Amino acid sequence: MEETNRAMLRARDAMDRAYAQPLDIPSLARIAHVSEAHFIRTFRATFGETPHRYLQRRRVERAMDLLLNTGRDVTDICTAVGFGSLGTFSRTFRQIVGESPTDYRRRRTAPAAPVPSCFTKAWTRPSSFG
Image (cartoon, rainbow, N blue to C red; front, side):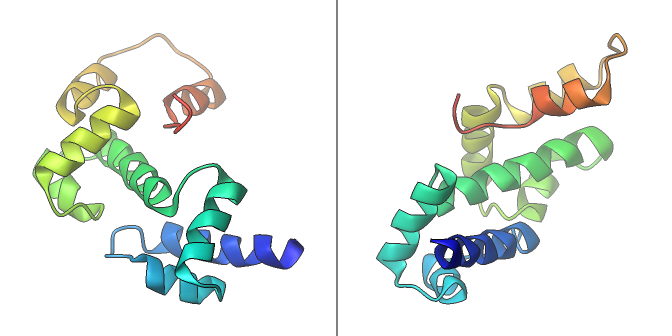
């Protein structure tokens, strides 16, 4: 079990490092030294979501940071985080965050009452659990 967890962590770390690049299941399965089908099943059992969903969430998480901390337009951010289509990016962003990228930027850049950063990070981190 420990070796399996390490293999899945290697693949997840590769996804975290190269989230903006095109990643596919065969290459991630090779990193974990397992078959493609076994990789998908084991990744989901280990982390609670499929590799594809994890990668989407990771990309959206990075996009959230870029929306708040840069003046780049949404299309530029979409391609910078690894999405090939603005429509897919917007739909995925809305599914994970609950609002469009533009609305997210507009609402988050408005002045707010001071809150400890640990609460802010916990509240704004996207979750696949709803």
